Length: 230
Image (cartoon, rainbow, N blue to C red; front, side):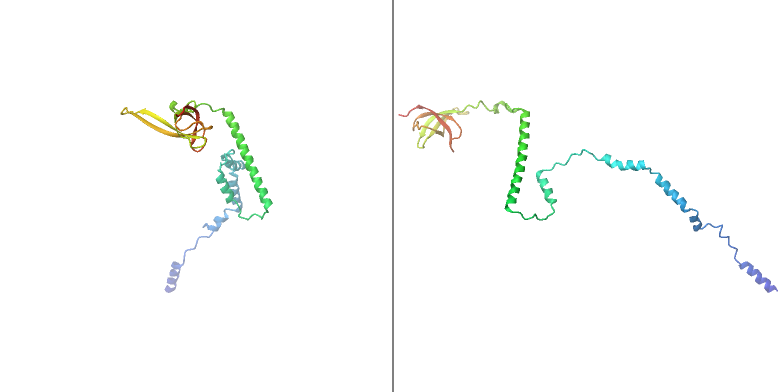
C-alpha cells in the first residue's frame, strides 16, 4: 500500500499543468479577422478622396504654365539647315528621271532663287531709302586724312622718247633741299603720257595732267607743248 501511495504522489508531481484556453491568447488569424475587407476598402477610399479632382486639374495645368507660348524659334544658318535636311533624308534613291524633267527641275530651282534675291534687294533698297543719303566724310576721320577737292594733278617735264604711237615718255625733274645738310638734291621720275595727235617730239617741254587709266602704264594725258625743241 505504501508503494501505491508513493506512485500516486510521483504521478501527481509529474503531471503537467493544464494549458490556458486558446480563446484567451490572441493569434495572428484573429488579428487578420479583426480587419475586415470593408474597413480596408474604406481606408483606400479615404486615401483617394484626400486628392480632389480640382487639385489634380491644377497639377496637370502646371507644366503648361511653365512653357513659354511665344518662345523664339531657333535661327539656323543655311549650312546648318542643309545639314539637318540631309540628316533627315531616309536614304532612298530618287526615281530615275529623264533629261527634260531634270531641265525643268533646274529651271524651277533657279526661278525660286531669283525670287528670293529679288525680295532681298527690294528690302535692302527700302532700308537704304529710309536711312537717307550718306553724305560727307565719316565721323572721327582726322582732317589731314580726308580727301581733297579731287582736282587732277598737273606736271611739267621734258619728253625723252616719242617712239610709241600716241605715247610719249616724259621726265619730271625735282629739286629739293636736304632737311639735315641743306644741300639741293635733284631727282627725277619718268611717266608715260597719252598724245592723241602725236604733237610732242623728243626734247620738247610739255605739260601733262592726270587722267583715268588709258593703258597698262599710261595714267597721264598731254595738255600742251610749252616749248619746242630746236
